Length: 395
Image (cartoon, rainbow, N blue to C red; front, side):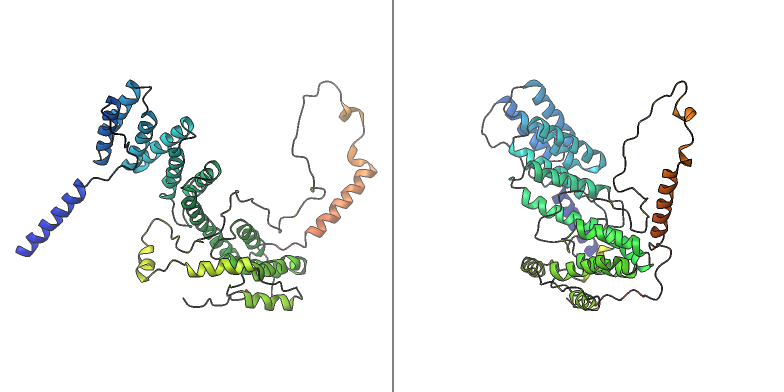
């Protein structure tokens, strides 16, 4: 009985200690003065540190409305946003983002504006989910992190945000890779090639980009001799840009069989991959076991160096979709007008019956027959099984 009472007493003491402990505010005013606006600001900061966020916002609004020419006006507006972020929850995060954006709009040249943009990025980064879940927060976090690097490139927050951006793109690339593996496994080679091509072009820093190039070359290879150049190009890029990959040996063998040139390894790529191997985040058994129960994604495999992609991915059309004859240029704008009275449709003969249009129709039919030779997702090439990727060396 005594043991149980002791345990309860220790738990109560821990709860009391953590509940009463103040979390120091990160943007205080160091100026020692007894001005009334400074007194109001200090009172609001004390309330924020103790978790009394609503009281703090009332005090800050009183400061801004009463002393509209105060030198602490910007700090007060930033403190309102910080109070919402500390309060948390979906409502609090949405209010914090709106307040931070207002602060950047009113004070774009202040050093704190870069910090406000970094916190907007963190709002969505903390809500980011695993690669097989809804990616809306990942996309939004990527957009906001890019905004900081573009608007505040010399900020002290830029290096940290660059790493956050690499983490975000690792999660996005993993989601694309899982879809591509599914298509490749079921034999939908055009769909797999389309996904993999966009993946390796958009996310070259992705930890499994070498595997993506290996599967890309295999997908093109299975689609027939027509796509042999694309297959060779994928294997060559794997050998050149990922020289320390476990897939390089098999890629060289494929290039020899296909009579393709084997390129030399890029020295910059060798240095980058060595750096990634030396600075790889080490994880234990508990990390893998508990990762199943976490909502947030695992970013331990993301790159630690390199410039993240600063443009949005461009969606492409799979090669199995036939291209209409004469669609190289095309017309994207269509106009119209109301026809009154008689027109050429009433006066002239049917244009479809002219010899010129009959000839163009025959050309279109011939082009359509050529397009029919394209591979289809539902009709995989027979007699070619998917090669098993080589085993990666044990950690």
